[in-house]
Length: 425
Ligand code: IZC
Ligand code: ZN
Image 1 (cartoon, helix red, strand yellow):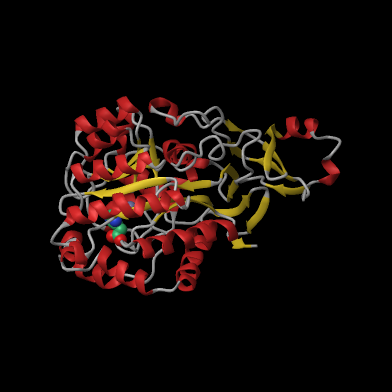
Image 2 (image 1 turned 180 degrees about the vertical axis):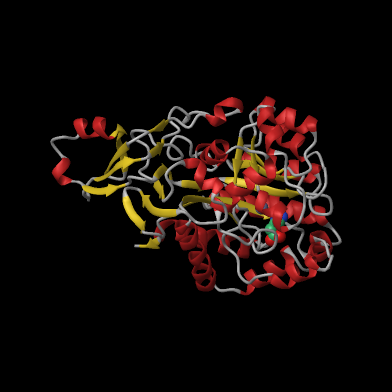
């Protein structure tokens, strides 16, 4: 079915990020946004067909002008739809009680070791029906869309048994079909050692490797495999085994690395050639250098550091060292219960020393590369998916400067308007 073309005209800034589809941007290139003033984009059949100044696109499409629906973007910034490359989207329940405890001095790890934290969300998620999980997760997806996000990665990891991990992944697959947002799935059976394996964590590692990974891969329910490599959770040796096993089944490695304590997670990510290493608050200089060398993308989560009242990862240092950097919400009920990628961008500037241009790269094209979608989304170029966000600010710097506000005005997903005037269509 072909729909009417959609023509976005007169953007005060059209941020294209052109020329970055093959590889993530690094170093000084992370400030190259390729902006077109008085910019214009022609969308048709779900794809971007023409990009240029308004005059250029008007000339190229002059015979078809009458056919198109027009969006006047004058005074506004047009960017690729934002991409969130690290979420724990599908879960039940919430953990505001732990928030209260942490404000009184308890730590994230203490709460988890007492059977709360990930274990609390695992209990709630195991008890929830498929329908409840679907409904709760869909609400979050709607909110993501309202914040200008058109693609998210979603991890399992609150099932911690084959049946319950499959339940989470199936909900994600169903939402991917029914919701405008594209969901890229990651299996994270190794998110915590469940309570009934506490005495013998290696037996759980064997279960992840021998039972869960083959089944998830065979059912094609995930593209990536992730592990929480952290002291008291999974060791670097266990993490390596799990990620190597996933790779044998076609699941690409990602890793939660050096979040709470330095644990040589960045080094491990570089050694095994992970697609991304995420968190990295406590990554060593050596690990950062190794990531730069092997091209591992750093997915940084400044909302998590903010919410855990910890010092953020050093995004500035990583970019200067040549590591490709992406940003994400880490949306989850424990350490970052937010869907606001724009707020994360603000924090990227204010807490990690990144520039407004760098955070835009980190939430569009570099985020797309972190989930292997750089060829498809993350920049405004001919033949890429027509995923576009329009912000009600006159230049991209105001997105970061007027912080803590959702400036999303219009969102277009695969050529269809899904948010208009800040509301779901
Ligand atoms: O539910 O606490 N860090 N995983 C690793 C999380 C935070 C999510 C959670
Ligand atoms: Zn996470």
